[in-house]
Each structure stands twice: as C-alpha cells, then as structure tokens.
Image (cartoon, rainbow, N blue to C red; front, side):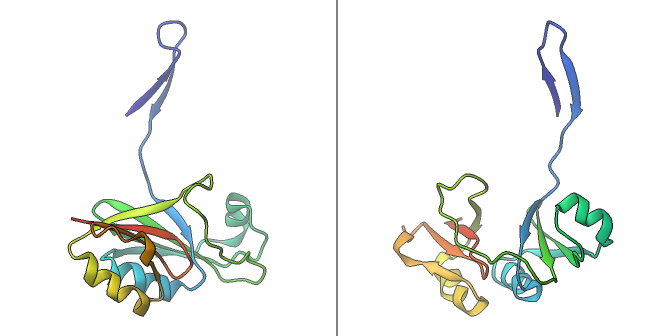
Length: 151
C-alpha cells in the first residue's frame, strides 16, 4: 500500500508500507513458547540472537543486551517473543485495557471452555469475571492480555 500526504498540492509519496510483526518482551522464553505454541497453536518460525552493540542502540537497552528473539506465526500474524537474558530488566506488570499503548491480542478458538481450562497449566490466568460465553480475557505468563473469541 502506498501512503500519500498533501495530495494535489505538493503531495509527497512515502512509498510501500507493510506489516512485519508485533514484539512482546517475555521473562521466560521456554515458558512463553509453550504457552503460545501448545495452548494457542502458534508455530515456530525462527530464532535470532543478534549482536549486542547494534541491538543496544536499536532497542535502547544498555549492554549486555543478551537478546534472543523467537518468531511465532498464527494465520499470517507474526508474534516476536523478545527475551533479554540480563540483570536489571524491569518487572512485568499487568496493564489495564484503557492504558495507552498496545492493549491485548485477540484470537479465535474453536472451544473456549477447553482452552480456558488449560490456561493455568501453561502459566497463564483466566479473568473469570470477563467471561461472556463467546469471549473471555486471559493473561499469558507475563500478564499480557489475550482475548479469546469463539470461532
């Protein structure tokens, strides 16, 4: 898709824009992979361990960065799990839905009841008071909100 600004009077063509992935920082890479792959059906795509110096600059994280990035795919959507294996990372915290920034992921599941019953076994939590029968919120092992929808 091309993006154009000020069309008709000195418009500027920005060029092609396309989607890559959404990044999610996690505290335990193996636990998060298990949650997203085994519980929600994401598939492993690739793993990278980039050099610290450029990664420190790009991510604005002091060296040593010790980043491992794992890319998971579900129906064309790519989730990048970012694990910074280092001291001094901020703790995870639960964000509310109305806090500015990315709020949640939403996925369709064939059987909400079955998935909800399995969430605790994968380190997540179910927000039972959000259960509408056709939709419910859960949190992944690091507190990321995920909306499960019937479908």
